[in-house]
Length: 107
Image (cartoon, rainbow, N blue to C red; front, side):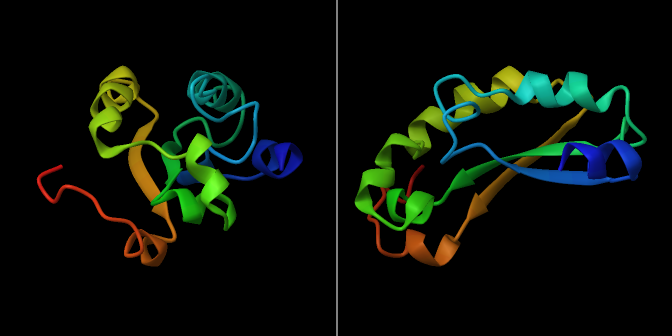
């Protein structure tokens, strides 16, 4: 993927920040992506924080909870990165799997 990004122009990158130890919580490598993009044709791309919509969505098993962010934990992560010029927002993977989980609807 590195060669593709270095040789192409992307407006948006939806990065999977889970299911990979190097970029999963608690040590998100969002800032690595921001720095990496500075020297590519995609220097102006917006990076989205891709997260699983539920533990099940993370890896197809309930063991995916290690990658899942409880809704109450998301605001602190968003605040940490939202002022970056590369901030695109949050993307949730497999929102249909979220229906299998029960959340407090006020979050």
